[in-house]
Image: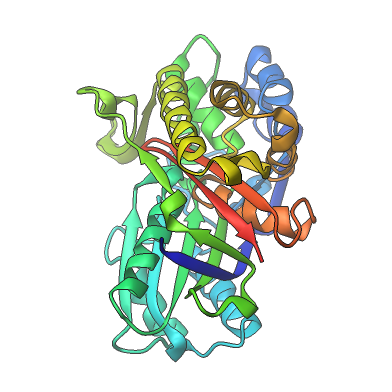
Length: 368
């Protein structure tokens, strides 16, 4: 058993916010078939998303590459400084910095390089960057943090993460004249732009023994992870740089959502079975289940496949509707919201079912 305490949690969104209705009926109306617009408004389970772009100021010139209007690393610094102050910590108190990213500010170096400098962390701080693990990376960071403490390293752990994929999908769909459901590749590129919010998150974690300041406690023995080992599994989703007909570099996105949904639901179900088998009492006392906010079709399917009582997952649907798919940060966000909204009170248990391109992870957490 390895117990770790999450003492502080927070998420922060960019200032640009849009309803899906606004995006499809106003900003991108001329690009979209009616079927696409109807799906966006009625089939995603999402009302509002947050973007690092002012979409109302986008120029019509499709050849111009658009960088985010809000710098990701600035968002990291802002939320990290707030976390350190709120938890009464000095930068020197951090012994491990872990960053969870998909789309980073730079291809190189890793964002940990800039964070160590700008946050004023110690010159002997340990750092790691978990890039590209997609939406199921939070539990990997928790396990790594437990290892940091178990090996006797000093200092608390600071986890910073982001979902910042609008840059990929926006620059893809701007090259498309007309988006219809019949062209699946274009349609999926637009849907992924539509449902994902840009967001950063933070967690400060201490080792067992500092329970008086703990928000929630996690026994890392309850973390179960599954990967799909089928030979062609890696082909179900990817984002890559490719060259267009004008010899310009652009993002290329490919996804098989039906295969992805089936795969992650099966893996999630296996994790839940193991949780119930190894921790039957705690499992039966779970009052809230948080699931990765991947959109209505995914959440409904995983809830059914895992045999979860939908009422116990209601907060997942509420948060998803309010802030969209928060990707890598959804597990962290749902833990925070379950405590802030008093869905869970002291002594009660929550469960997380996380999943994404890399696989599925599940764990229990205990409100302190």
